[in-house]
Figure 1 (cartoon, rainbow, N blue to C red):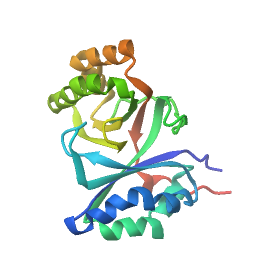
Figure 2 (cartoon, rainbow, N blue to C red):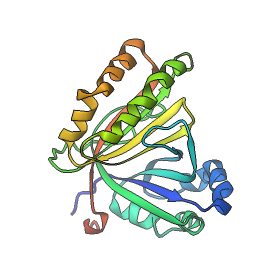
Figure 3 (tube, one colour):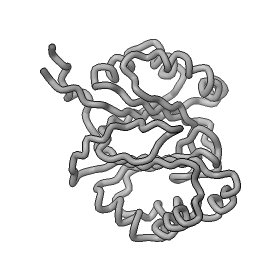
Length: 227
């Protein structure tokens, strides 16, 4: 019997102007049908930032759907479901990153959403960082984080990055996709980003934080489980 492995998907939906109000309303209206999806372990429907990486400016044309699945079969079933098709019919384009978590620490509203496999990799790597900012630390956060995010534009090996989140400023996350773990770590620990990390820890900016690493996978190459 094939051993089932947890799958993570992150889909970005881009909407035309005429459908952006519909997309915005889904932040609440879609929660109930998403809760009923079979085979899902965790999900978050989020807005996105309009700039490079983290951005204070919202992007009302693009929304992100993060899903954690029991296995590839459950993930494939969802992307044929009526719930997904409603999103697909309203958007002008979408793209899904398929991933497997290899490392994770921290929580998301008290939950540990990802089950890391602890696999080693020398190839491409994806990262999700997420934090809930303490209200009395918001101004410190706003002073340092945006400039640090913009510095990633010059980072070697960065393929793609986008700010995602449930609430502006106080609940923020960033998704980034890198050519290699080494290049990601060069940026994270060898630049001005490292100094901000020290401030975060020393000044305790966050109520909660999470850091997770993933490897990209081809979901179509994962065979169905057999009894």
